[in-house]
Picture 1 (cartoon, rainbow, N blue to C red):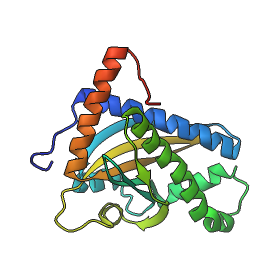
Picture 2 (picture 1 turned 60 degrees about the horizontal axis):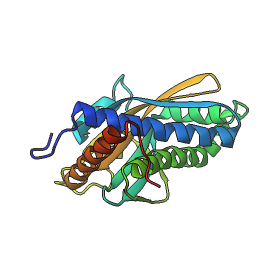
Picture 3 (picture 1 turned 90 degrees about the vertical axis):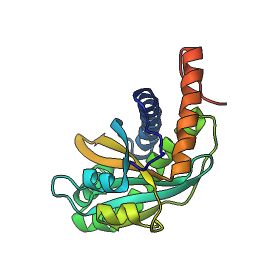
Picture 4 (picture 1 turned 120 degrees about the vertical axis):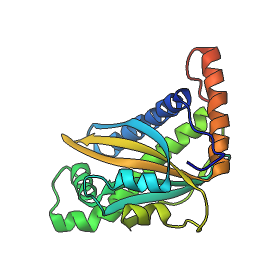
Length: 217
């Protein structure tokens, strides 16, 4: 961990996990409306790690090639959001979203568009909910689909020598009786991490005072 960067304590991680799970639940509802089938999304694990640690965690079980949807976000906290799946899971996700009615060639042809739309719904669901609950505003870019190794995905667009950290969220995705796993990664620099910690502390204080989560109108 970069010196001088505050770690997220257990209470902050719990609060962030709750916000992210609320965000993916809303994203799941949007996907349900889009495809007409129940979608279950959850984020069981949240952690703040270095780029090197993130690559090591994602590239486990000998998986080295991935497909990802990336969006940039700006505001009090800024960085890049990635929805990452192993290549095989990307194809399986498109198969699940389309009900398994497409041929492999059709899935490959449709994959880029379907993943971009799915990634946009999931990432925006998370970012919008986090922003709403933390009483801040975030602007997001148009999603783009990337292919490559974990190192390629995490380092794309990074200026050499920067000290960006990765908020890595393990995600499970269930649709059409298929269970698909991947990651949501939020890449932020030191100042954004510090801002996130401050916003989380304010959120925790509000929640403790109210006894429940209070979204900003």
